[in-house]
Length: 264
Image 1 (cartoon, rainbow, N blue to C red):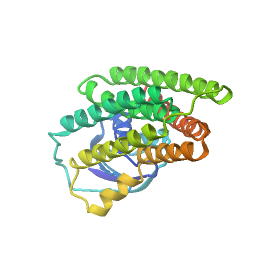
Image 2 (cartoon, rainbow, N blue to C red; image 1 turned 180 degrees about the vertical axis):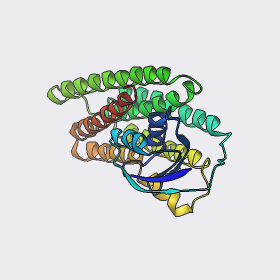
Image 3 (cartoon, helix red, strand yellow; image 1 turned 90 degrees about the vertical axis):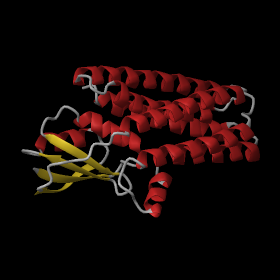
Image 4 (cartoon, rainbow, N blue to C red; image 1 turned 30 degrees about the vertical axis):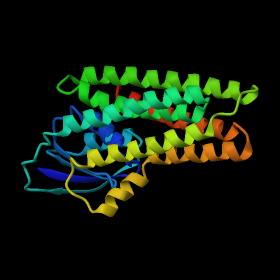
C-alpha cells in the first residue's frame, strides 16, 4: 500500500471535498481518502502508480499538487457510519437557505441575496449528488452532475440578465435591513454546516476549526452581502447590491463548471 499526500490550495470547505470524492470515484486502486480541510491536504491510500489519481486531482483546477508518495503498512480504515446522515443534514440546511434567500431576495429586490441563494443551491447539488448516487454507477453520477451543472449555469445567466436590467433601469432600492439580517443567518448556517461535517473527522484543535470556517468562500460571500447592504443604506444606491450579485453569480458559474467536469 502506498500513501500519497496532495496539497489542494482551493479546498476550503466540504463542498470541494465532495467534488474530489466524486472525481476519484471509480479508480479501483484507491483504498481510502483522508481529507484535512483546515490544512488543505488530501492523503490518498492506494496500490500501484499514482499517475491516474494525480491527473484526476489536477483536472479539477482546485490547485492540486502532489507533495509526497511513500509506502505504508496501514491497510485497514475506519468507515464513517454517520457520513450519510451528516450529508443529509448539510443538504437540508443549504437547500432551506436557498429557498429562504431566494424568497427574501425577490421580495426585498436584492440581487445579492438571490445570488447567494444560488450559491447555497450549488452546495446542495454537490451534497445531493454524493447522496443520491451512493451505490450507483459512475455513469449515473456523471449524468446527475451534468444536469446539476447546466441548471446552475442557466440560473446564473438569468441572474446576470436581471442585474443588467436593474443597472440600466430605474429600480427601487433593495431593503438593506433584510439583506443584512438574512445574510447573518446564512452566515451562521454555513458555520453550522462546516461544524457538522467536521464532526465526521478526527478531532482538530478549536483554532483549526475556526480557521476553516472563516476562510470559507461561503462565509466571505455572506459578509460581502452584509457589506453591500450597509453601502446600499449609506449611499442610497442599488449599485453595491448589483456588484456583489454579479460577483457571486460568477462564483456560481465557476462552481457549475467544476461540477460539469465530473460528467466528462
